Image (cartoon, rainbow, N blue to C red; front, side, top):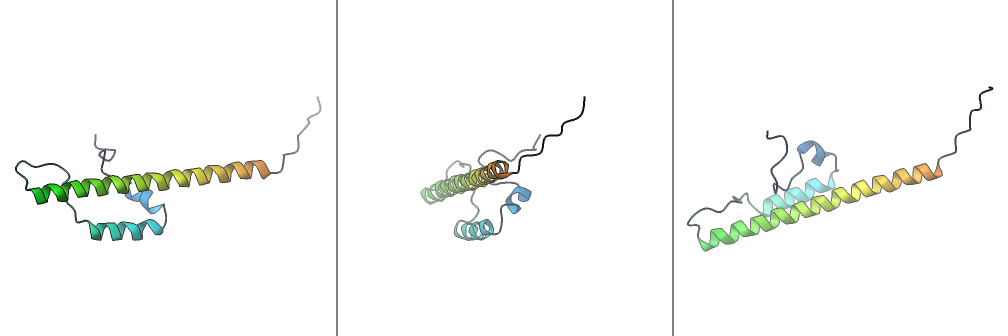
Amino acid sequence: MGVLPRRGAGGLPEAAAGAQGGEGEEEEAAGAAAAPELPLERRKGESAEEKKARKAAVKGAKRAAREQKKELKSLFKEASVAAQRRAATAQPQAALHLPS
């Protein structure tokens, strides 16, 4: 079907990534410059240097995915806490009594 991103891709869709704010873009740009795009799949007969580079790329992708998950969880938690606070401090609505 191809609707969902592949597992281990380590990225949110562009629409969701843009909703996080400007701070993540700077980190992504710095991370992208530090680690060039390397294949994450093993190829037959790869050299030791290629293996080290691939393993480092996989580690970096997993690290980035963990950081994104942590940020997303904290955003949802902050939103949940804010909603609970609004609900707790909201003025109680006056009961409407209809004559019977």
